[in-house]
Image (cartoon, rainbow, N blue to C red):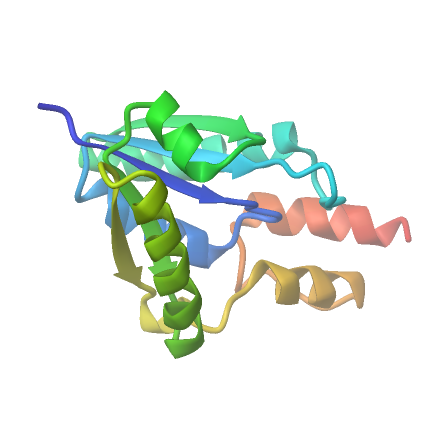
Length: 166
Protein backbone atom coordinates (compact mmCIF):
# COMPACT_ATOMS: atom_id res chain seq x y z
CA UNK A 1 0.00 0.00 0.00
CA UNK A 2 1.31 3.43 -0.94
CA UNK A 3 1.32 5.86 1.98
CA UNK A 4 0.28 9.36 0.85
CA UNK A 5 0.70 12.50 2.93
CA UNK A 6 -0.45 16.06 2.37
CA UNK A 7 1.69 18.99 3.47
CA UNK A 8 -0.36 22.16 3.18
CA UNK A 9 0.83 25.74 3.50
CA UNK A 10 1.09 29.07 1.76
CA UNK A 11 4.80 28.64 0.93
CA UNK A 12 5.04 32.39 0.29
CA UNK A 13 7.95 32.14 -0.13
CA UNK A 14 9.41 28.65 0.18
CA UNK A 15 11.93 28.66 3.03
CA UNK A 16 14.67 26.35 4.20
CA UNK A 17 12.31 25.44 7.06
CA UNK A 18 9.77 24.15 4.53
CA UNK A 19 12.51 22.15 2.82
CA UNK A 20 13.53 20.64 6.16
CA UNK A 21 9.98 19.39 6.79
CA UNK A 22 9.67 18.12 3.20
CA UNK A 23 12.97 16.23 3.47
CA UNK A 24 11.76 14.55 6.67
CA UNK A 25 8.33 13.78 5.17
CA UNK A 26 9.91 12.14 2.13
CA UNK A 27 11.57 9.64 4.47
CA UNK A 28 8.16 8.60 5.82
CA UNK A 29 5.91 8.28 2.78
CA UNK A 30 5.93 7.01 -0.77
CA UNK A 31 3.79 9.87 -2.12
CA UNK A 32 3.93 13.45 -0.83
CA UNK A 33 1.41 16.04 -1.97
CA UNK A 34 2.55 19.58 -1.31
CA UNK A 35 -0.62 21.67 -1.31
CA UNK A 36 -0.38 25.43 -1.81
CA UNK A 37 -3.26 27.17 -0.08
CA UNK A 38 -4.89 29.89 -2.17
CA UNK A 39 -7.16 32.18 -0.18
CA UNK A 40 -9.13 34.93 -1.93
CA UNK A 41 -8.81 37.25 1.08
CA UNK A 42 -5.00 37.20 1.06
CA UNK A 43 -2.62 38.89 -1.35
CA UNK A 44 0.48 36.68 -1.59
CA UNK A 45 3.86 37.99 -2.66
CA UNK A 46 4.18 35.27 -5.32
CA UNK A 47 1.42 33.69 -7.39
CA UNK A 48 0.50 30.08 -6.75
CA UNK A 49 2.12 29.15 -10.08
CA UNK A 50 5.43 30.77 -9.09
CA UNK A 51 5.33 29.13 -5.65
CA UNK A 52 4.70 25.78 -7.36
CA UNK A 53 7.70 26.43 -9.62
CA UNK A 54 9.89 27.16 -6.57
CA UNK A 55 8.66 23.99 -4.86
CA UNK A 56 9.26 21.81 -7.93
CA UNK A 57 12.77 23.13 -8.42
CA UNK A 58 13.81 22.82 -4.79
CA UNK A 59 11.89 19.73 -3.65
CA UNK A 60 12.19 17.31 -6.55
CA UNK A 61 15.82 16.50 -5.69
CA UNK A 62 14.79 15.82 -2.07
CA UNK A 63 11.97 13.51 -3.15
CA UNK A 64 14.11 11.78 -5.75
CA UNK A 65 16.81 11.09 -3.16
CA UNK A 66 14.26 9.24 -1.00
CA UNK A 67 12.37 7.58 -3.86
CA UNK A 68 9.24 9.56 -3.02
CA UNK A 69 6.69 10.55 -5.63
CA UNK A 70 6.13 14.30 -5.32
CA UNK A 71 2.99 16.10 -6.39
CA UNK A 72 2.50 19.85 -6.12
CA UNK A 73 -1.03 21.20 -6.22
CA UNK A 74 -2.97 24.26 -5.15
CA UNK A 75 -6.25 24.27 -3.24
CA UNK A 76 -8.81 26.86 -2.19
CA UNK A 77 -10.97 24.76 0.09
CA UNK A 78 -10.38 22.98 3.38
CA UNK A 79 -7.16 21.03 3.81
CA UNK A 80 -9.23 17.97 4.79
CA UNK A 81 -11.06 18.23 1.47
CA UNK A 82 -7.75 18.50 -0.39
CA UNK A 83 -6.38 15.51 1.55
CA UNK A 84 -9.37 13.37 0.61
CA UNK A 85 -9.21 14.51 -3.01
CA UNK A 86 -5.58 13.34 -3.25
CA UNK A 87 -6.00 10.13 -1.27
CA UNK A 88 -3.86 11.30 1.66
CA UNK A 89 -4.08 9.44 4.95
CA UNK A 90 -1.57 11.70 6.71
CA UNK A 91 -1.25 15.43 7.28
CA UNK A 92 2.35 16.60 7.67
CA UNK A 93 2.86 19.57 9.96
CA UNK A 94 6.16 21.17 10.96
CA UNK A 95 6.82 22.42 14.48
CA UNK A 96 9.37 25.09 15.37
CA UNK A 97 8.47 25.71 19.00
CA UNK A 98 5.81 25.49 21.68
CA UNK A 99 3.76 28.26 20.12
CA UNK A 100 3.52 26.22 16.92
CA UNK A 101 2.57 23.16 18.96
CA UNK A 102 -0.36 24.94 20.64
CA UNK A 103 -1.77 26.10 17.29
CA UNK A 104 -1.06 22.84 15.49
CA UNK A 105 -2.74 20.79 18.22
CA UNK A 106 -5.91 22.85 17.76
CA UNK A 107 -5.70 22.42 13.99
CA UNK A 108 -5.10 18.67 14.33
CA UNK A 109 -8.12 18.40 16.62
CA UNK A 110 -10.39 20.22 14.19
CA UNK A 111 -9.06 18.29 11.19
CA UNK A 112 -9.43 15.04 13.12
CA UNK A 113 -13.06 15.84 13.87
CA UNK A 114 -13.76 16.57 10.19
CA UNK A 115 -11.62 13.80 8.71
CA UNK A 116 -10.82 11.11 11.30
CA UNK A 117 -9.30 8.92 8.58
CA UNK A 118 -6.45 11.43 8.08
CA UNK A 119 -3.83 11.32 10.86
CA UNK A 120 -1.69 14.35 11.67
CA UNK A 121 2.07 13.78 11.96
CA UNK A 122 4.18 16.50 13.58
CA UNK A 123 7.77 16.87 12.41
CA UNK A 124 10.13 18.96 14.53
CA UNK A 125 12.19 21.54 12.69
CA UNK A 126 15.92 21.00 12.69
CA UNK A 127 17.82 23.36 14.96
CA UNK A 128 19.23 25.51 12.18
CA UNK A 129 15.85 26.35 10.65
CA UNK A 130 13.70 26.84 13.76
CA UNK A 131 13.68 30.66 13.68
CA UNK A 132 12.77 30.89 9.98
CA UNK A 133 9.31 32.09 9.01
CA UNK A 134 8.09 33.18 5.60
CA UNK A 135 6.76 36.39 7.19
CA UNK A 136 10.21 37.33 8.54
CA UNK A 137 11.81 36.44 5.20
CA UNK A 138 9.41 38.77 3.37
CA UNK A 139 10.09 41.56 5.87
CA UNK A 140 13.86 41.20 5.67
CA UNK A 141 13.79 41.10 1.86
CA UNK A 142 11.50 44.15 1.68
CA UNK A 143 13.96 46.12 3.81
CA UNK A 144 16.92 45.18 1.63
CA UNK A 145 18.35 42.47 3.86
CA UNK A 146 20.09 39.30 2.76
CA UNK A 147 17.70 36.35 2.97
CA UNK A 148 20.06 33.81 1.41
CA UNK A 149 20.65 31.96 4.74
CA UNK A 150 16.91 31.37 5.07
CA UNK A 151 15.67 30.38 1.61
CA UNK A 152 16.85 28.36 -1.39
CA UNK A 153 19.09 30.30 -3.82
CA UNK A 154 16.31 30.42 -6.46
CA UNK A 155 13.96 32.12 -4.02
CA UNK A 156 16.64 34.51 -2.72
CA UNK A 157 17.37 35.58 -6.30
CA UNK A 158 13.67 36.22 -7.02
CA UNK A 159 13.25 38.20 -3.79
CA UNK A 160 16.35 40.29 -4.52
CA UNK A 161 15.07 41.00 -8.02
CA UNK A 162 11.59 41.87 -6.78
CA UNK A 163 12.81 44.34 -4.20
CA UNK A 164 15.60 45.89 -6.30
CA UNK A 165 12.82 47.45 -8.40
CA UNK A 166 11.14 48.99 -5.38
